[in-house]
Image 1 (cartoon, helix red, strand yellow):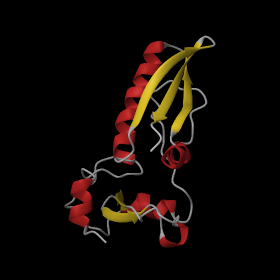
Image 2 (image 1 turned 90 degrees about the horizontal axis):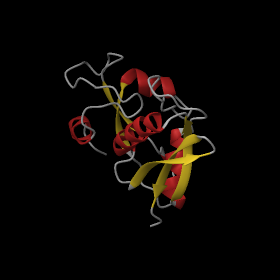
Image 3 (image 1 turned 90 degrees about the vertical axis):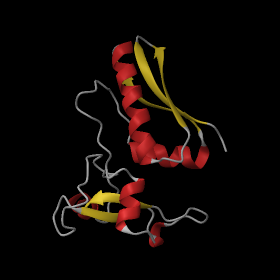
Length: 150
């Protein structure tokens, strides 16, 4: 197990759930204070997959409880049918391949979404080599995540 300072430094002092900054100086008893969250708990671990410790605000960590947290899409992005990101990332980690994660009305909206996804996923799953692209299709622009099979 890692110490709070080690996990916080590795994660850039950002909460893995809400992606907001975590103040290292805030009390661990404060709702916005730092805590360590184990994404794959011992009871949910999959053979061969290590337990992953991530930095989270105490409130974000507590709120998720026994349910899978939701990684929210920003309201500033114009995306139809956005995918559930943790489910998508889990599938891409296991199988690799390609997944459409949303539809945008314009190329510019698609580009903004793809840029946000690449940035967000670089912090959510740092070891996953994922590419985010935009493809025209059916009068819309599809945002696609691709991972090379390992």
